[in-house]
Image (cartoon, rainbow, N blue to C red; front, side, top):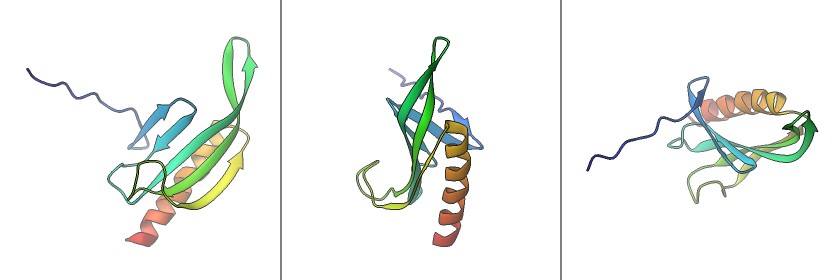
Length: 97
């Protein structure tokens, strides 16, 4: 029986995966990944919108999502968090190579 591979959703060419209130961004084969934790949400109409997001650039060489944190910050919405985190991740990966 053939196994179908699911296509991952990408943002700027890198996979982005949500698991509960945690979002993983980056190539999972790289030494570093970006982890966004949604800490707080607010209700707008019928949608829960992230109002507090923790940004972490993590080591990805050990257990997935539990590596050493290299950079960390909080932002007040998901767009700002992903924008800053993506820049940090690019910069950190560039320094490693």
